[in-house]
Amino acid sequence: MTGSWRADRIGAALRGENPTVLRRLESGFAVIGDVQFLPGYSVLLAEEPGVQRLSDLPRAERLSFLSDMDRLGEAVERACRRLDPDFRRVNLEILGNTDPFLHAHVWPRFEWEPVELVGKPVWLYPHDWWSDERFRLGPQHDALREAIGGELDRLRSSA
Image 1 (spheres, rainbow, N blue to C red):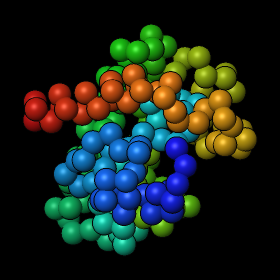
Image 2 (spheres, rainbow, N blue to C red):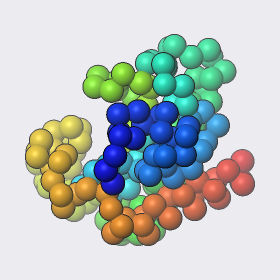
Image 3 (cartoon, rainbow, N blue to C red):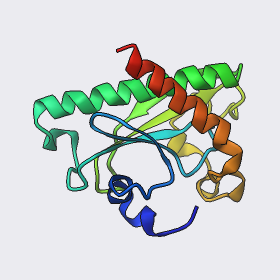
């Protein structure tokens, strides 16, 4: 997955050119993460590129974004629990320290994680893991993408 879509992830999603998009949600796009050292890592992208903070949105749109974050978190949890017996939990984060657009991280956590990291924030994983080819999103993650997307569909239909 190469290309200029990374420079404008939201615009590329709006144009149908972002290959990481799992589903269009009410407030934005559920995407699978570029790196998968924690398989199932996903991100919710707000649909408006100029929005930088949750507080930039009117209250109704904030609640919609938070509801979509919850739905993506539950979809990742269900998919990861089904695919990996060592699944532990999901961590949800809205940080905004690096990318200048509103987004929420959904991190699955597992029993097999290194003991020194399992109880710590994922941001403490070794810096080189974030660019390591072993963890780059690719065709080997297609079943995971389908599982999360399917769970998003089920959650939408049960709402």
